[in-house]
Length: 374
Image 1: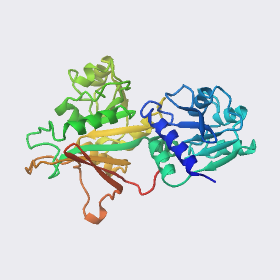
Image 2: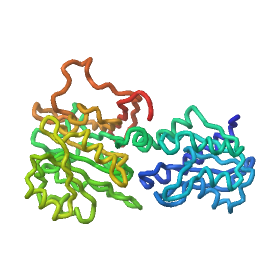
Image 3: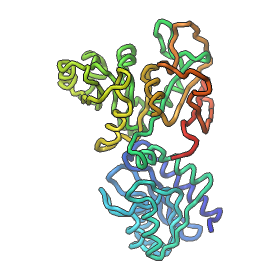
């Protein structure tokens, strides 16, 4: 039976897990709290891949004396050996008497087996449901999708005016959204594994695609979908490829000379198949999901042609749209998603689990393309 005190301890574990957002990939973020009665005796969280998992960190923080205690952990303890040992065995050896878990681990190596090990050792196991469970699943939505499908979790981000424009008819887009929105996007860049743009955006905006906020932030893999390998050698992406990892997806239409020039500058080039004359989005995502380490989260930042390819491929999981309180107008001004579009409103891609919040003067609308969580 889960008590109010149990819920309080799990909330604490979830807050601990949040401290490592964007730092543990391809591992999940996990927090753990160990308690005896009303007293916390140890707590910890998984800080980076290869370092102690949350359960082990909490045991060490308690000085190893946790026999008969309860551990509250945000994700099912692992039961296999990777870069670290199995957490289920660590809990058994430490003498933990009760394990309260907020969410199950859907990966093939775990998926209930960790809990089976604990129960077989005589440990009482309880799995939460409700709001805390939903929060725990949301913390690891990218990890969960990749564990089930082998594909990255794709977030489509756009910023547009109130009349739905992402740039003026002349192509100017700096800046539609406000300073607070741009800061939030940089924080998001620091949490995802990769950022993707199309060749048009790379040419027009000449972006750097880095996280530029203070702190211990890793830089995401920068990806350009560029069928013909037209990314300019003098672009910021190419000039900084030796410092920040950069990948260009091309097709057989790309000239070998341009590919060699990019590779000589330190850019990784991957050739994939075509779909409607463009890079096959599905094949590119398979490539990313199967890399070592895997790309489990991808931020799609533009532009409207690439966005359309992702929409038409059914590849988007989450949408984050910043709406600025301004009108741009103009028939030639671009919109967030172009491409063929849907013939009928009834055929349009529906969005679910919609939320909104103010970010400075802008409104951020967040929604998902699936009704159910991963």
